[in-house]
Length: 154
Length: 156
Image (cartoon, rainbow over all chains, first blue to last red; front, side, top):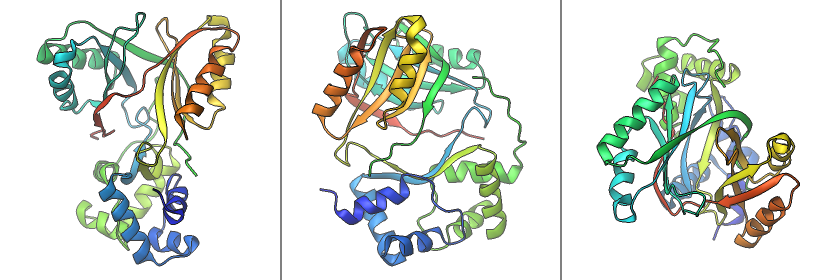
């Protein structure tokens, strides 16, 4: 279970942390614990896998990666494992997930691909196809962003 | 969504972005730790990150949590909306706190969003309500069955 202190820590770290020379010290003071306690809790949450990382999230299109395609693959179940691992090894893929299928949605493996333009994204997909042997796929491009925000848990 | 890059990244910016995407050090003086890796001063590291944040190249410096390990449930939703209602539906969907990513895509399923809820019941109820919105043809819930990779890293 998540303790009240951990919830409080999550609430301070789910948004922007202060860009000062001593952000952890500053946040610890606000939370009402010592910096050492805060760093210990964060390390413990990281060990438990609750905290993936503290880091910077980029607006990738502003950093030059203006094209992102959601590539959806139709993979026989006994080949999902292998194909998923191969796709995950591509640096251009940020997210690789297996998801369920429906009669009107037959694609069960997803890889989010990033490039400076669509040709680059399509090139990555072709290379993935060649390496995995999966040829049935489709790339869905986003044409409009309605929302992109971090989750606020507490 | 081709937004022009209006800020020229300096060599130091690139080094720092490549480092800080992976990890912002859990350290009393994190910018000092970054500076040592980047080969600059602590102040230069701080100023670079502040400028990149102000220019919007860095969207956020903070923590990324595993929602499942926090006890939350989430899914990816593929929704088909009649085109003339799509925007109205998208705005209603975006208004939900549990929706973090919401995109129009070039497919019969023309709206794709992620939904995170406290419980499975709340998630089902939310999806059932969405399904009844005027203009929604159908929706499909595509929760992750297996995670092979999550790691947004852009080499700069």
